[in-house]
Image 1 (cartoon, rainbow, N blue to C red):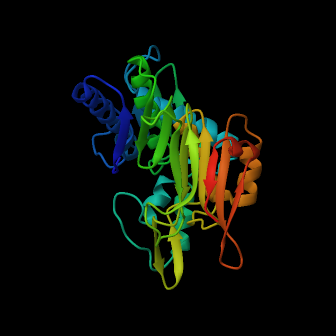
Image 2: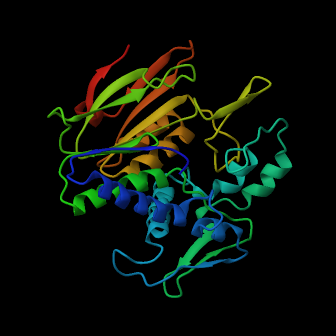
Length: 317
């Protein structure tokens, strides 16, 4: 996934457990990592009409289960966010230089952007559960689960720990976190929400939260962007316009029972702005949001849903 992971868990055999975790992550990468030529998602993206999934749709060990879990959840959240979370923006992510081939777009080619928009939309990908064929409407249609796959990886490790009867753990992949029980300090796990400033260090925090039995995922454009002629281009792509979306939200942190959900909604919130994000998250049971946004005077503001107060320990003014 191009990042690091960090696990804290009590075990009598850490080496064996690490091996299990690594094997699990290798399996996940083999299905949903767009940087691997051999992965299922890459082969689907390079196909003309689609690809057949292996095996049958039964059991926890069904083939391609990692891809399917990401696909079904992405499809559901795409519908719930009115298309603002859309994994089919992959062609535009590549155009703007945030995919495998890193580059900076110095001149915006609107004609090219418009031509790529014809491939965007979850309605352009469909799965026939009878034949197990995942089809697409045109060769240019492709998928990118980078805004949900890290969260899924976190959940998959947590499920592994649960199967091993582990009651206290902390799982983090690339900043996306899920915990259970208590920390080695015999208290709830304490997680920091970073200050969304490209000049801030990773230890500069805007808030601290307590987290037990929940997941927390954050999204922001303040680190993954480039600037051309004074114009900033962030990695969050608007699936409607095809352009990088720099809203008033500097970072969106979402609390949910599972990390997949938190991960995806954090990305969707970055697309729609602070007020719409607040309204969206407030309406969904079991999900809370903490949003840091830029004010007109250049300072940072904070807005969060009512249930977030149960997690907040401290805020930095």
